[in-house]
Image 1 (tube, chains in turn green, cyan, yellow, orange):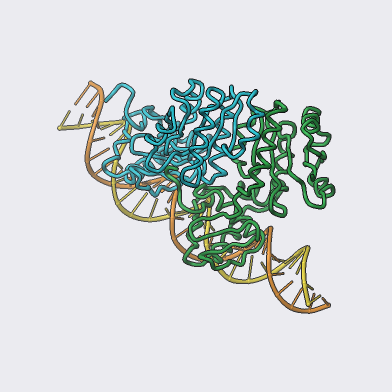
Image 2 (cartoon, rainbow over the protein chains, first blue to last red):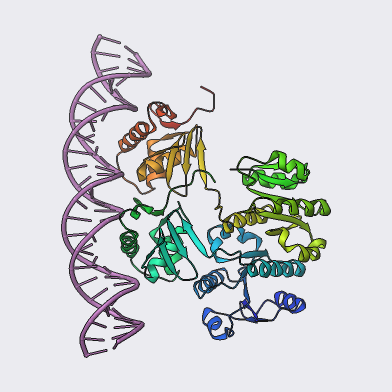
Length: 226
Length: 226
DNA sequence: CAGCTTCGTGAACGCTGCGTGACATGAAGC
DNA sequence: GCTTCATGTCACGCAGCGTTCACGAAGCTG
């Protein structure tokens, strides 16, 4: 079995012990670069990220892991009780979470269940909104079955927007969530990409992205209920 | 929003309280038959099954729920620590589990994440007063479901007023709280925005904002009755 | 009612924010 | 080397919006 990726390095003793006891091979890594260098031939079996130790580094790593080749390795987040509220805006960064400190038995059950359900392929590989379809595996977008020729950044931006339909994002939020936290650049960059996206969506569907003056941009219609 | 199915009936007080606090509607049912009879028009939004109380009945219910129309309503299992080992053979009966006793915040986070990954999205953050609804995520306002086309300042002003119903604010207070502390401008600016708000609320609802002469403005009814 | 204050109304001004086109840079491919 | 394309930045122009002003109506006080 391929090893699990553990963050940070060194791994917390309780976590290391629990994994050893449950019989899962693992390897601790301390940075995104280290994750690249140490990646096994067939990819990681999964990842367990301790966000209770280094929250910022953890979420950055999650984002990096999510961005690489699909299919994703299942990602389990360890969080302190005080961090639960932060999860709401980062639903896309993990597949399951576990409160820290944890019972070894609970961790084991979560890993087993995670493997079970990702083995069955329940992870959505398509993002759909109306006529628009994003294929997360082939990195392609299509509208009414007609493929759109999007660049990397256009695709990433559209993917982020389409997975949060109705919600308004400021340029700063988009820069940090799509471009990355450490990005320093003019906020108007977002405008230009929005413009190019609208152009490629075509006149008919350009209104999928609406401008909220003095605030930012919104994809799709608002939700007034469930 | 459709209610969550809770098993057993009556629902454990801690669970009922946590769901009420988080704002999820729910309905306790005590048997598979009851689940059929009470099922809402559009199906259950999801199910929370307390397996720590009645393990056999719980798993039977899970199995019954799984057998009906796809796609499944997401199913969250509450289990005692001693039951963790039993889960391994029943992976297909639930989508997520939570240790009992639980922290309300953890339960809330699990429900939100479950809804997110099964594609139902999270509940929008709303500010409501009578027929008026403000959606804080989409930056939109609606009255009786009919969307209002508000500008940025109008929205901010209405949001501030609607989150403090019944309270009277002077123009100076409004300027500092809505416009910003360092704002230097004529107090009459407030009047104009109030006027435009009243106009957009429509004749019927213009009285939502009342003038308190020599003091300022108030949203909604006074706390002393009429 | 007179005098004053306070508020509503309409209109006009001026600035801000956004769309747009053009261009610079750098990486990828030939 | 050159070419092509993805990406980021800038300057310009316009429309929308916030602000202000003037005038009249409405309220309070005596």
